[in-house]
Amino acid sequence: MKIKLVKSPIGRQKTHKKTVKALGFKKLGQVLEKEDNPQIRGMIKQVAYMLEIEE
Image 1 (spheres, rainbow, N blue to C red):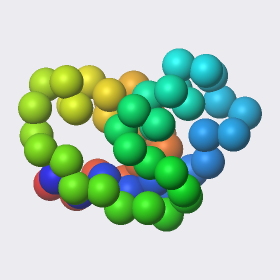
Image 2 (tube, rainbow, N blue to C red; image 1 turned 120 degrees about the vertical axis):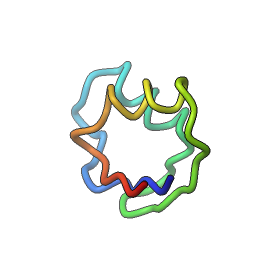
Image 3 (cartoon, helix red, strand yellow; image 1 turned 30 degrees about the horizontal axis):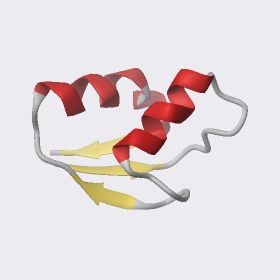
Image 4 (cartoon, rainbow, N blue to C red; image 1 turned 90 degrees about the vertical axis):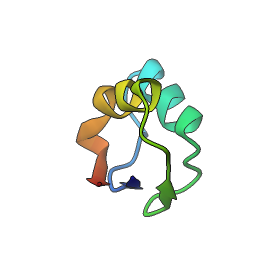
């Protein structure tokens, strides 16, 4: 699955910032390809309002 960071984590909750970093994002607009598993799904669900998801 492809995920893209479309909103900045600046000013968000600490846990959400850490989740974005744990997913591997370093800058806005970055696209990452991740395997589909329950751990990644949970992280994406927590910060879904900042991401665009493409299956």
